[in-house]
Length: 178
Image 1 (cartoon, one colour):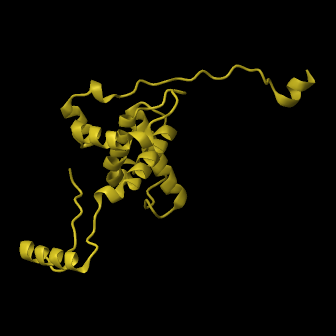
Image 2 (tube, helix red, strand yellow):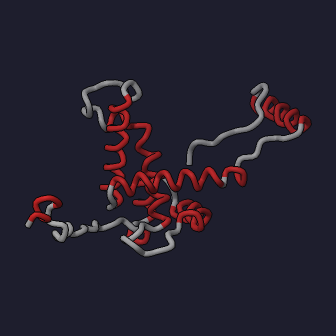
Image 3 (cartoon, one colour):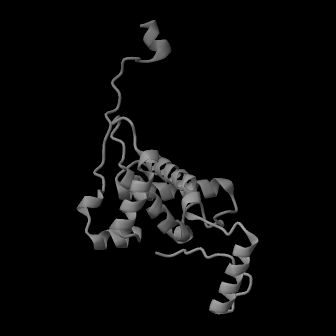
């Protein structure tokens, strides 16, 4: 009896885990994938295959989400991020998004809640997936981002940019659309 008063019921039953239905790519049409994630099925598959070794879970413990789901969570995050002010206008009054640290954290946490609800996972899982995919992509950056190393390459690029569109001093281009 004293044990129970001091430490509570140590042998109490744990709360049963609830697993939500998850969205899987196989169940969505190409049109649904494009409208939800702004990527084509083939692009999602390419990114997933590229990052599979970095993102695959070694165990099946606690029903881990697939690599494709992790990639989709980052894509959905990037889709919602520019609109975060409009999405959460009423959260924590109407302070500017980067004005107060606690307000910013609350808004980003709510963003992960939206992603989690959409994908059928907890917001902490969505947050970890976005972080893991971001880090995995950053580890592959040298395979895809190339800047001219030698001066003659830089000069050739600058001349090409100027000839192609009268854009002086251009070294490279970053494409930000799909």
